[in-house]
Image (cartoon, rainbow, N blue to C red):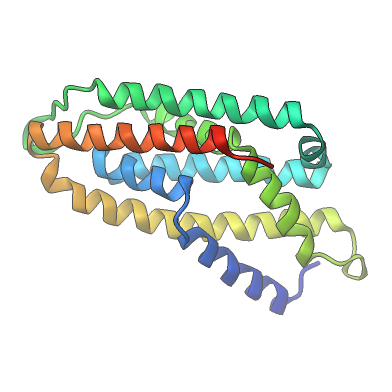
Length: 208
């Protein structure tokens, strides 16, 4: 099992990594600004569920298969890029209509949650990162490697939930005033579309 010192140091590093600008926290920020804090938090929960999938992939050895297969890596990243392009198209063609009182039109909770899962699981860079990062904090002397990997994945998910949750909260609060205007909502949606499209292009150009 993990020692207290290793768990604490790993958690600190995980918090710093979650704070570093990247596709996932940018995705959360845009979603929260355009659709509100609750929508952003649902996406965060989906992203964390995706991280759980990456953790199990590393523990089961599936991540090593992805790392060794150029075709699998390419197929996964193209699927992710296609999904982001679809989100960009939806945001760019949105008319930016808002409810009375400035409340945005929302997707269903299940849709937002699944959006976070798909966004995370279709990014092969996350799997490869976990494959390279998590084993560095394990040691056979502390027992079976699999429970250690799962514990580290759980700590990483906790750090991500705290940091991304804070991002969702503050981005939603900043976007609240803009969402009171249909014109401002349209501008937010256009910005979101550009961000999603940029993330799609970045994913397509990424290499192992």
